[in-house]
Image (cartoon, rainbow, N blue to C red; front, side):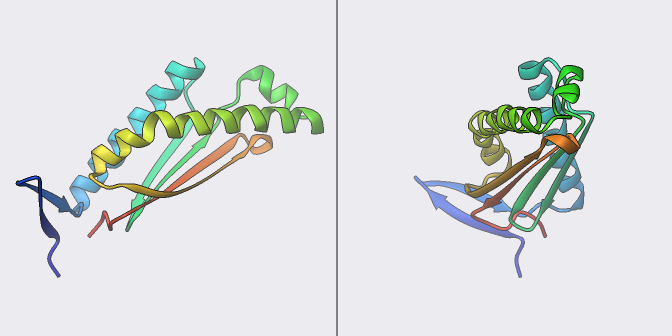
Length: 137
């Protein structure tokens, strides 16, 4: 099986190249830095732990430790948990709008499915994106 598929688009040749181990690690690190900077810029606080995993046709972004100190207090009540989850779901939805075009460009692939979840009571969020092609070898 070839790892490079050449396409002719508008008379130009582009390559839908699968990422080797070194390229994969570089892209994952680049996306980790991007996510940390994005949340620092938009929320004034970066996520304590960010994990980026690219496997086959998927990108998985996981974050832990994203709540502010006041949110950690509020989330301890049932109503507070729902309120914080709703506000952070909005943040994740905006993250998708703001960042998916960059992900598509960086990975030279089109996002075709998304799923995301926020567990405010566990100070955890996850976003999974499925692309239109296999990204890894």
